[in-house]
Length: 354
Image (cartoon, rainbow, N blue to C red):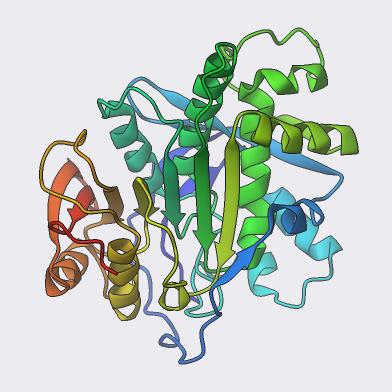
């Protein structure tokens, strides 16, 4: 079985922090199969209907500046749900493999480059996040989108008090639908619970009056009908739309609307999938230039390790794939110690990719 050997640890005491195991990983047992899961759009209610009665969670501490802490469903809790649901695919349950090409793409775990991407987002000069369409590809636990969602909730609740509403769309995609069910949506719920005033009635103290809150601690959240109803009501009230898709990038609809911000992390490990990833990044982009980040167009940010041992992919292969499709890349973050990591901005000159 293939192990990436790079992940965000799920600590025994319930807390989580970024760590790196640099042991080389063995080569995967098989190449990408010819039959991939088709791109499928999934209604939010369909995912809501599959939630368990309660979820266990822990704080995920990201080494950003300033420090960032986000709530995240515990990995053991997600796997326990699979066992209770009598999942036919033991890949998700066993944890023996981080990658089975075309079957399971590692989305249940949080990976290091997601934290790098949050750090870059924090450093942007953009003054607001609401009113944008955000697309995260290969989202998994959706750490970058959770940070954006937190900011959108804070901004939208403040703006709603003055009648200033703007539509925000968060579109999250992962190859595996089960990942969206088990970790992506639960993590969005946890972010809403900890950082939205509309969730204050469900806090034990019942005195949540602002979005300034202490970092989340470990706990269990009961997903009562009342809480889920409040969550679903908050979204249209704040003009936030959550979209979900699963399946292969190559099957993405040609009518996928352009996004203002496209995020992806730890998704360039497979050379075979790079052409479809780059094509989708291009297709989902507005006209883009190599000007400042405040210019009109789509901001595309890709976080990756320089090399993925035993798989063949990495930053160089991704850059070559982008250039092969007429695009450009620019490095906006780099960490050279250990196994190097980078965040790249990607774009295409004055083209939509359609």
